[in-house]
Length: 108
Image (cartoon, rainbow, N blue to C red; front, side, top):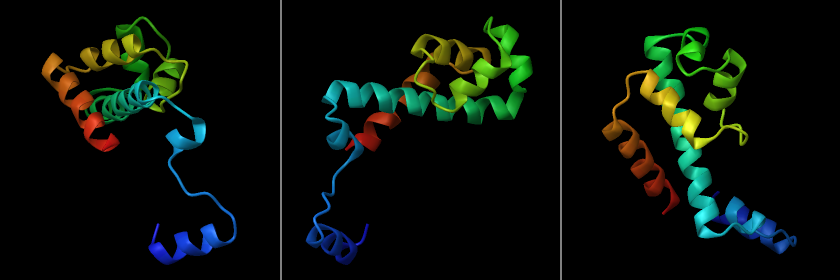
């Protein structure tokens, strides 16, 4: 947001901040959300290169709608399922580690 817009909004009584501030998230809660979102984005990108959601679902003992939820950052999807799905697309532990490390960079 550019500075002049921020100043206009604040002058009208609006508070400007981050989602984490608005939701009063702890740093740990914010980190967990960023990790899950990074894994979701990475899963979708990797999966689109090698298979369909329908093909991935049985590999992780799940369903196509659940794969779609995983790729779209649905909060009901566990980190375990995200990691299993990434591994099923051919991701290595190093790939997963890089994804998590990149999520940390986005929080700064």
